Length: 592
Image 1 (tube, one colour):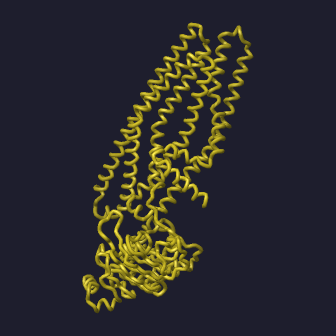
Image 2 (spheres, helix red, strand yellow; image 1 turned 90 degrees about the vertical axis):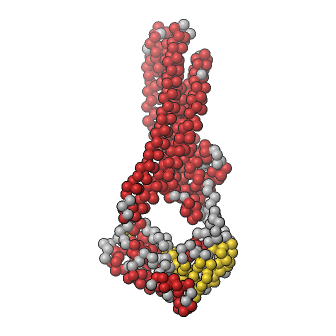
């Protein structure tokens, strides 16, 4: 666990220090893999050696056959034997090289995804509200895959290119420096080709990546909206919307394909032309008696290798650009600074449940209007507080502040007389429970969903909380009982059943503070009554905060606070507020 956290920190430091240098960031991924990389290069050299040896052997054999009066036939056997030895070792060296390097790449791939997931868990709720989940999914899966492909293919290709060109240059320089000068002329042409196409390829890759992220986010939203879309007969609207997205991807991908094609085709024609010129040049030297026929083959083979590797380098450039773009893309997450503040200055210990809002004000980061203003409320441990009011009154904001999703713009919140800003939020949240308005369930069994985040839970405890929320009879009738599988987001359950499973999950935690955000909004009258009974029992066991749309569900709350424009304008028990005939009374009358 510590090692993984260190890896995340290393990546964060690398991104912070090299924000505009994706190549340096990518090289930083290999930190701690130095010995494996040394072995990889060593076996890569051994694996690649036949490519350098066979041209020499071929040249020797041609010269022996051409000038047979000067050589013994056994020299042919010697050269053939040498070539076969270098060829046969290629299987073992290739296997060893790939085995070592593949482990390194797969570990980097895993570390990148784990770093992204850890960072996502550290980033604030406001960050997640602003970032589409589909885009995050694209970064975790697609962008990391692009980087893995680049590292896997790019490293081997680049090392091969360097080795092949270096060996060829050394051999040719040893045999004939004049021919080497002809070879060197190829390099400026390659540089010009890369320079000319560099900007269009980079821009088109960047545009294509953004289109893919936006479309993936749109697909995720479309899937979530299918029930709503189907219910209102809006299938064609969604199909047309997605068609527009796909058309943009098609056009963006087409432009990228065409620029890559022009880049590759232009480079191929140029270097094939150089190869023909090389053949003519070396043949002319042989015709004049400056070099042997075997050397013509040697130079032509090495020049073919050099041209081929330069073409490989040029063809690699679009993938290199794509990978670099993905390196920058995941940097939007790893180097993001919108982290949840967790000072952990004062240990909380066992939570008792006393809460005090002291002159709390809150506005969103880019907002102008105060959502809460001078909000003051003292809550004793074990007391139950209900918040009511119109839409936008600030009810959910109070709960988000209490959970720690948002930080007060002014004032402070005390938990057991400790400033919440000084608490370890993880320690605090482990002792509270939240039942959100939108039920969140995952694919798995009913038991898995209820016991989420709680260890060593017995089946009896699961049944107990199911009884409390009135779901025991429903679950008993299911094949498998609490081990019955539910679909994605609990799709096989009704809305009321999903909500009660969510409440059961909260009850199982035995919290000291429990927060209900309109938890009964999706329930029918019978289910609502059962949940209300369970909620009433919970009120006697811990501090309870409720936001309720149906005012009849909060009769048992110790205090009801009526909010308007971020302020408490009325508070008291249900009976007191009804007798007062103020705003709460009028809200209640509107519901009857």
